[in-house]
Image 1 (cartoon, each protein chain N blue to C red):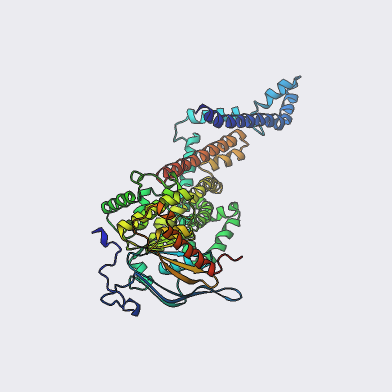
Image 2: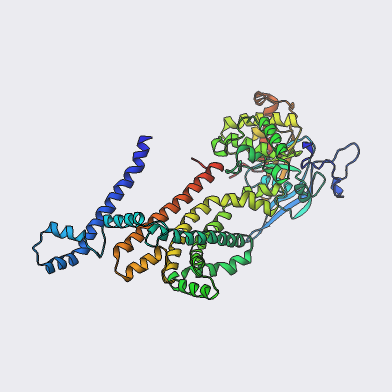
Length: 292
Length: 284
């Protein structure tokens, strides 16, 4: 038990330390020109140690240090109530709400498309090229169009962002489910035929359960990109709320620490969301006899 | 009432000439006349089955034996309505195979167990019963009963991966028996198992057959397995797939593994081997 724990923790810890070291190194390297300029203007003599300290303490660094980001996030979370516009959790909540709604819509759309493609041959020929083409259009190009069109129809706020999320995340679901629904082995299909099972019974008792492992792999990809979709969707809305709007306003005012705080927050959010999907997979697996 | 499930005992057979039974001769469970199955391959037609005539009576244990490509599995699949013949007549329980399949006239055991890995052992056995709409309590009773029949009491809540290959195949036999069909079709069910397990399962199967009185059609490529289990052995040969010989195997119905050492057993085995040789089964 202890060996397996250290085997699991140690690589993660080593990697985390390496990333933080590289980050600090990058901060010195990228902030040094600015820092030297500032110290020259102040007309002081400075040593290398002074320079390093200066690069770690800039007001608007090119690359903020991890501790600056952590302090920024901490202040934002503790100095204001959760519903406040300056609290990062508020923005995280706004973004995850549209990401999750878009994710659910994307899963439904993706599964329905996959079922259609697997069961109706003409749908495969007619739908699949469009589905693939839809993913070759840059999301940054189509996101403002979706916002404008839905805005014209009277939909603002969460829905346009959710639609953009859905647009991105239905694709891995469709691809995974088509593969999953087709993964049924011939013997099992023959078996159902000997029982004279109806198409509906074959779907619910055989095809769908066979596709579940594929579905969960797709869900993990989909939930991560649904978050990307929600953040991208917040950029053209003018950025009142959400992690995307924090990124946008941060870049307007050169607030790099704010940008990086929002970035770290979205990374944490996606890790949490993927972990939730992983947990759901484990729970389902326990009821369906997956190998432990 | 469980005996009625899928067992068309009260069904009126469709009026086919092959199903007409005289008073002193009961209708055959499987009646095949002049049956052929031809695949159209790229250059020339392939005769998977050619001019097959075979009658299987109630309570028979018939083995189909022959080298690969002789059509033994194809013949079994034709009986099960998993393949369509190109010519000839066939009735199963006095009906066309399709009607028989729709009435769930037979249980089919495949080369592999083909258990659903997401279902427990019990729920694998109840799968056909769920499809047929049997109530839950009855399903449970039938599953317990048939798992006991194959010696797997107490494994109801296990998942297939927790069982050995031989046990998995026994679950699949319990599944085929669960809805109590009169006819059991088995396609090399023990082909993938080691010899010791296979001996054990053969013994179990012959007891099962003796106690339940099912009609069995059993595909194998093992001579001793065929002689040990069967009342009749159908020797087949490839290119074209055809029946060479039908050998009666009149050993007593109650059999133990020791029977394989007796001269009668050896004699029948020799006849089967001779039949296969006549069909050039041992040629290169």
